[in-house]
Image 1 (cartoon, rainbow, N blue to C red):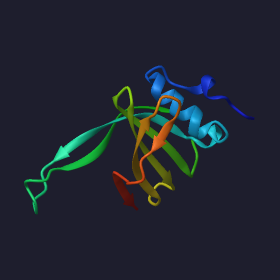
Image 2 (image 1 turned 135 degrees about the vertical axis):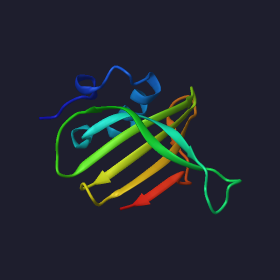
Image 3 (image 1 turned 90 degrees about the vertical axis):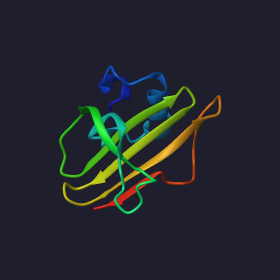
Length: 121
């Protein structure tokens, strides 16, 4: 069954978040298991107290389906033209998490080449 994003999107997603989903996940929307929003948790680094760590913290989420292999997408909208996308994929105790920054150029979101955050479990 091929679901369209309109059928399963939560109410808290903004227009920019929906536009990103249509641009990057229209064909593979069925693979998404959870969608939501995150925020940065600022933590002081013991080794370098002048440079705080930014850790993603999921604040609101909507479970689309249950699966052994998960593909979760969380958003943080900094402003109208900047969107951070937190992608987690893998099994429960394995996989990876990555955050990319996307900028709106007037017609589409452009992915910045540098990863903001990367964890391999």
